[in-house]
Figure 1 (tube, rainbow, N blue to C red):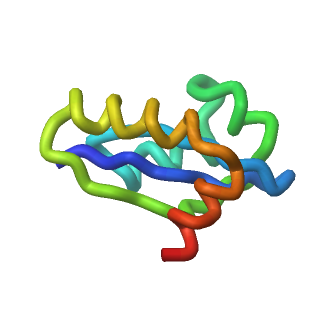
Figure 2 (cartoon, rainbow, N blue to C red):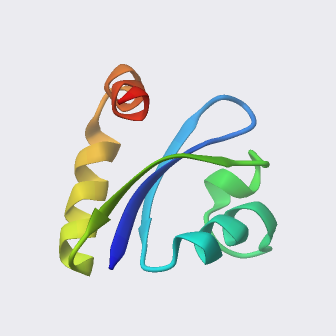
Length: 80
């Protein structure tokens, strides 16, 4: 199982990503020295949305779709 997720950063911005291990990836976003520079400088981050995907390819495609959404549409996904 793969996941597409949205994080809310300490500065209020949103970050979208995908992974096959959501718990581990969230820990990396909050604690690791390597990884996504965007979240590394905006810690702490909070998981506010997730979707399950059957394959890595579907997860990456959905991640790209979410990243193209406006902030308002991302917030709409989160509120559902």
